[in-house]
Image 1 (tube, protein in one colour):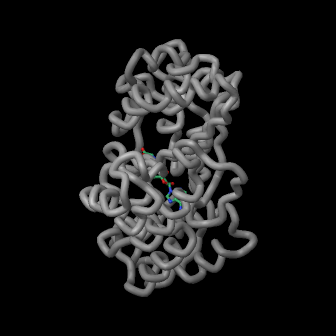
Image 2: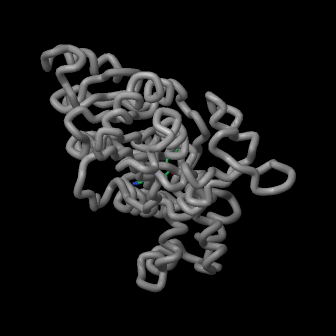
Image 3: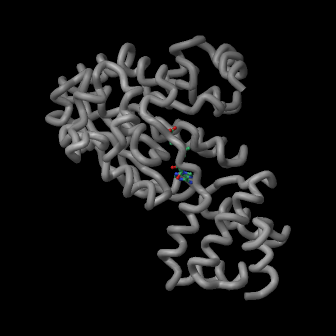
Amino acid sequence: MNQMAQHILEEGSISDADFARIAGLVREMMGIDLQPHKRTMVASRLSKRLRATGYDTVDGYIDYMLSAQGQDEKTRFVSAYTTNMTRFNREGHHFEQLANDILPDLMNQARKGKRVRIWSAGCSSGEEPYGLAFNVLDACPEAGDLDVKILATDIDTEILATAKRGVYPASSTGTLPNGQGDKYFMPVDRSGERRSVNDKVRDLISFRRLNLHGEWPFTGKFDIIMCRNVAIYFDAPTQSRLWQRFGEQLCQNGLLFIGHSEGIGPEHAELFTMVGRGVFSTDTSRVGNNKSNATLHMGNIQ
Ligand SMILES: C[S@@+](CC[C@H](N)C(=O)[O-])C[C@H]1O[C@@H](n2cnc3c(N)ncnc32)[C@H](O)[C@@H]1O
């Protein structure tokens, strides 16, 4: 093993050049902005991958990872630099707003034949899209028989596999409101310590790998996009481009939900009006009926 690899492994540190190379690749591939304070994390995750693949130089490892033979390693590289932290009913006020103000009307429209599409973008291990499905089913138990679909996407195929499994510790479902933890789960073992979402929930959701920083293969538009605690990891131009693309991907009265530490800049006031904490409508006549009003309103959330 050469000196550089040893240095990474032993001290959890990384040279400026190697950090810059990894950070550049992560930005190019995923849009994620690895700030200098992430150096120790990068060194530790990189050293694990070097150990696992047997490469003793960062350059050798990267060449392999980017080669045709390195496809599996590329998947692991992506997983290594994503942050998958999530939980059921995270930022519960969003689910309350959906349950009280949005889904009753949307589901009534679905009953009359409207096509309803909801997208959880950056769904991690699935708690967010399943939470959406619970609320859809609360509002409309027969949603599975209507043209109602939830798309759940993430760049990280490893976490997506966990999401598809839909099996969680029973203790993690305790934060769910309205008895959802009992209604939409079934025990998977005798102890009852792990629970699986039921088929009614599964049938509403399609899980797909999708890089938000790449091409989107959609033909239709969405009524609701939930993309929370994802853009926070992107740099400002990448975030701005994402808000623009979400605006274009939403229906006329569509809604975008973002995380509490994320903000949409006033340059997008033509596209969105804020209609709740971290909730934006593409109907810009809804709150403040002129552009300057909307700009002011959105300026407040920066
Ligand atoms: C912190 S989790 C947020 C999960 C959930 N939305 C929530 O708020 O609880 C961020 C997720 O975004 C995903 N992600 C990061 N960069 C991405 C990209 N370029 N395209 C798609 N997903 C990405 C990560 O893999 C991770 O699962």
